[in-house]
Length: 73
Image (cartoon, rainbow, N blue to C red):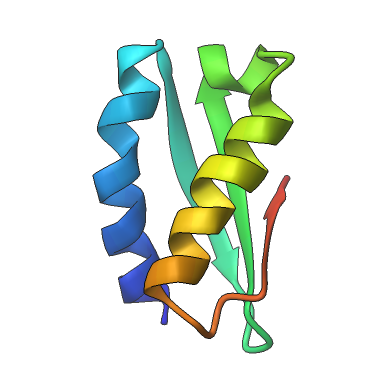
């Protein structure tokens, strides 16, 4: 599943980089929890929670049904 998550993150990465940020995959657990780290401008942005939940998590769940939650670490 880690490989699938990486592929989806690669699709999302250009949008984050356009705003001066990026995303790093930290871990994918067997129970469907994905841990990521937002970096650059995204790491300190007050809207990062929305980016994570409404952007990253929503896209991962849509493309990979096994994903249950995305957490920022």
